Amino acid sequence: MNDKKWRMAYSQERAVQYDDFIKAGAGPVHEQMLGSVAEALELTFQDRSLRILDMGTGTGSVAARILENHPNAKITCLDGSPDMLDQARKRLGADLRCDFVQRDFGEPSWWNGLGSFDAIVSVGAIHHLDAKGKEALFSKIHRQLRPGGLFLCADPLSGEHAFFDRLYEDAWVKMIQRNLYSSGREKADPEEIRRYIRKTQEAEGDQPSPLIHQLKWLSAAGFEEVECYWKSFGFAVFGGRKR
Ligand SMILES: C[S@@+](CC[C@H](N)C(=O)[O-])C[C@H]1O[C@@H](n2cnc3c(N)ncnc32)[C@H](O)[C@@H]1O
Image (cartoon, rainbow, N blue to C red; front, top):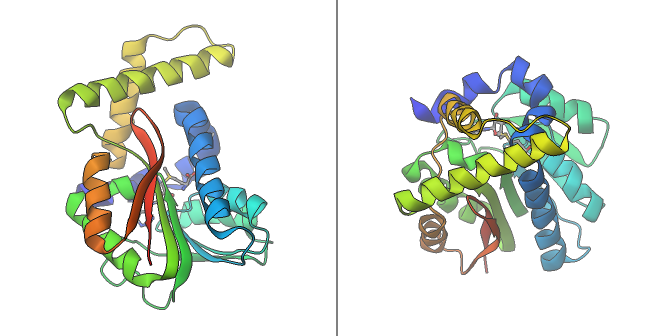
């Protein structure tokens, strides 16, 4: 089943190499997504102490980045992969502001015992669910946010038309090419990069959805202020606020 391929992909081997893997495959975009998430939280909540959930925390780089802007925050770092969570513990385990939970947010009872949050964020994780899974998840997240709470999702997108799928892929190929070039590697063959992107997406069971669909699902889930905060071709940071 596609929804569970990420479990195989985020094994120990990937976990120990993940920070280099993301740098090579999406470095500049990943940095911008982390910055946009941290800044949107700061602009919304200023220096309030927050309880935050980071879904699909991976190696903890999102939580670490948020804590730079929000030193008073407490962050629950949640991931379904024990190996990724081990890496997050290595990065943040000594930080008393963080706790770690192994859960699969595609399972029906994943929320049990977690409580409520001021903000829920997720970078590069929710696109592993299919359309129905995302829609159901947004409703669940809305229910669990405190009034005034903010949900932010940073994820790859599919295009609403095949034309945009190709455009987004072309832009991704170019980004990797520039990355390789700036790290001193010779200009790589774009078709080889394209095959690498497709192979990785297939292995991880990626199921990105169009931005416009996801904004509609957020509104249907009850979010009143829904917005795209940042977008570059097939990557976006979007979310909604609960009144
Ligand atoms: C691409 S990594 C992103 C990690 C981190 N958020 C970052 O931006 O560096 C995706 C992470 O989401 C986790 N993940 C994917 N689907 C999940 C699910 N249904 N439940 C829990 N974790 C999930 C994977 O194990 C992996 O650690």
